[in-house]
Length: 221
Image (cartoon, rainbow, N blue to C red; front, side, top):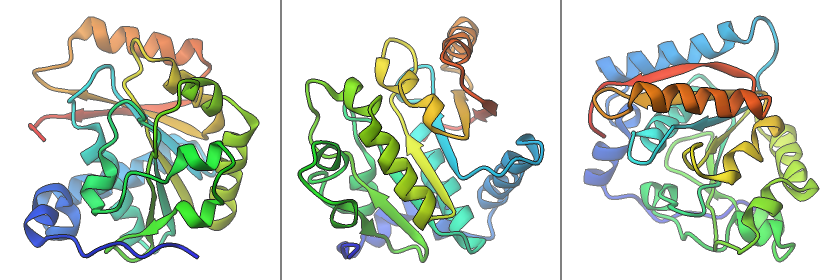
């Protein structure tokens, strides 16, 4: 059974879950456009799993993936967000659920998927937190066990979104790109250097990622 989460403080919801707090605002409309453009970019192929990453830390990736997930849930989709950023997990804070147990316990065969997933205040949106970081996290994410996690998500949800570490200098993200139907690269205006963005794209293509597009984050988040 999917676990119940504690009620999220309204002030925190307003700060982190922008689309949920103001579904008719300009930001919500921008995320709905991104949501729709993802399917257009797929050129007719059904997208059921999506990895979102960035060249470096603190570019707004986690806020973007949460609000994109909310837009998908508001459309009526069943959405699962998985925090695979063992180095710097944040999604458990956003939804006020424990960081552990989570994905690492599932990959370590210590816990069933359903026992690690929490529901959220957003109808149709569930979260699988990261759990504790293992010394061999890259190998676990590149394993058949992670493929089983993705298969479970694809069977029980309309969309699975992965919140990944930055692609540059981190092996975990490239281990996951071929387990997803598509990849979105997020860059932040005023922070991401052009050379970083190009290097991140090259790294993803080298890993044979299906890059659907780039999100330009213009505001500090």
